[in-house]
Image 1 (spheres, one colour):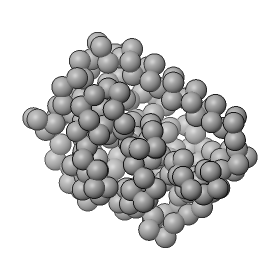
Image 2 (cartoon, rainbow, N blue to C red):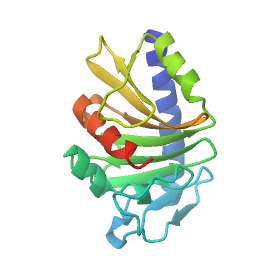
Image 3 (cartoon, rainbow, N blue to C red):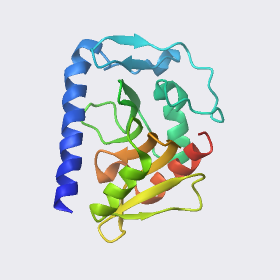
Length: 195
């Protein structure tokens, strides 16, 4: 369990480092939703604005494209009941991610929706089991998926939705207070209908 926790912390630290390096150059401090655009941050630190989204809440998610315009902060707010103040994208060769912040502050709690590319879904599931997480499914979530439960099934670590053999959509959070277990399941259920 300690190894898993250390691995998760290391991954989060690496992501925070990448984000903190990229953000000053990208000027993502403003919420681009005011004009319907979402910032796209590349690993090189260059920011671009995505075209205004015509995506509806029922549209299929394209895992190869920026998630923020496809999964709006309003959609996440509606599904979870948690007010999302800001959405921020991080896109690169291994992931497409959108972080949904509960406050307009870079240190605020956030919900992460991440497409992991080039990672085998079944192997990742086996790693969760090996790290003593309880792996279960939930009837409210469609398709091939698993919920990784920690601490004797009292806390959801993350939820993974199958896209294909070597990619999956992960729902995660940076701190426990960002979203509770029920909120994560509701969000996963809503997103599973769009994959």
